[in-house]
Amino acid sequence: MKNEDIKVAKKLLSSPKKILIIPHKNPDGDAMGSCLGLAHYLESQGHQALVIAPNDYPDFLKWLPGTEQVLIYENQKELSTEKIGAADLCFSLDFNAMDRIGDLGPAIQKHFNGDHIMIDHHQQPADYALITYSDVTMSSTCEMVYHFIDALGHEDLISENTANCLYTGIMTDTGSFRFPSTTSTTHRVVASLMDKGAANSDIHNRVYDANSPERLQLLGRALSNLTALEEYHTAYITLTSEELEKHKFKKGDTEGFVNYGLSLKGIRFAVIFIENAQEGIIKISLRSKGDFSVNDFARSHFSGGGHINAAGGRSEMNMQATIEKFVNLLPQYKDQLTK
Image 1 (cartoon, rainbow, N blue to C red):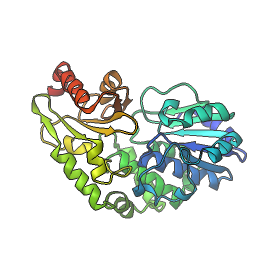
Image 2: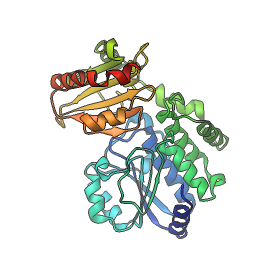
Image 3: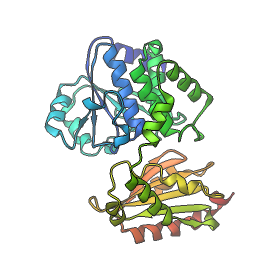
Image 4: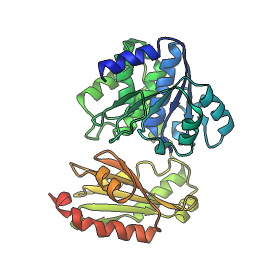
């Protein structure tokens, strides 16, 4: 983080403020962990901090300290709009463009009159914040929030609640510390969070060992739909809206499914295509190993983006047409996937 940005942040936070903290749409562990972790820190410094999520988030994250105070914009628009208009400062966490927060974006642009601080590790940030703390090499936004608090000189003030929240986001966004973005610094941050009270084993159990029978059956359905294209070192999974409905799909149930494709021997590129009949789109999650950039692939072909090894996208075609488009694109990437 730049020294000048640290000075500006210290000045902004030198007196009590009403502060909004916003995650991206369909918030995951890193989004909610970073938002709630930062909220606990800011409240300890005398600020009023409020997390407003664009829409709901998975049940396996609703044990996070402070979750009961989160406003869900799509369900609480009137109250959220009132809070937006009264706020002095807004943190954008785990996203870097207003189109990543759905209908909440226009509401903030219309009703919020304060300054923005962005903390994010995705590529190509938009230029709307007074302070942009962007680092694509970081494992997670939660790790960046830790460094942000440390840069303010308050690392020693990180509470147990903040530690539990930040640990959760780092754990989930690194695939339990196995992704290449996990560095020695990441492990040192995690060790510090554990020293401050992060209950590592309990957090893992709450996030990963909270499956319903329906979710495991849905995973079985997804795996039965897996197709491996060995020529291109690629695997993909499909799930239709009918299959989701049959297995009583709830938000977050497909989290991590795409990684099963990547676990196949010899596979470097894995994708899952999930039909969302309500929105009329196919939601796409992409993962890779090595230096094959799924960020570039998603940006070029499926209106998405993210990181080199993890990205998302979407298609407005039906499932069959989307799969045909995807498979037909692979020959032009064969050299990258097979080297």
